[in-house]
Length: 158
View 1 (tube, rainbow, N blue to C red):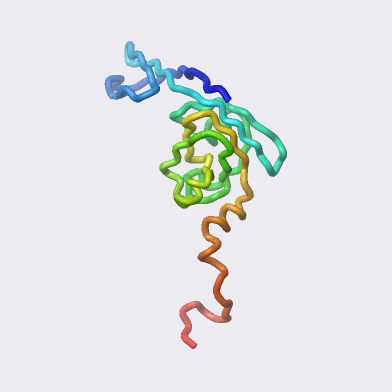
View 2: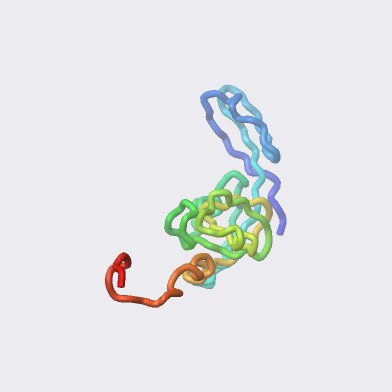
């Protein structure tokens, strides 16, 4: 997978001097408009539930889900804030930055899981959607449903 060199976007900002230089980003400011060049990456997602494969170009400063939707791709999502596992994917290749992914444990992140709603691409990506229940079970299964079931309120003493 090749990485696209740059995506050019125009940003109007009250004070363009506040657009600090960032690694991998070039900008030119004139008349209150900043020409910002942000590195983009090719993201390919195999949507297992529909059998479709989508390929989109995603800038490093945009969430993968947000960019995919703006390019007409419909992927699973629910909360859009990294708290659930509906948009979970398994990375087959590539790297993401997902600092806001509260719905995934550090262990699942190390195993290659990511939440598209809060993931920024850091390289070309090959990923496949996961069954939400499978990821939820991996994340929380050891905590729920392991004890005996009793009738009554949970706070009742026997």
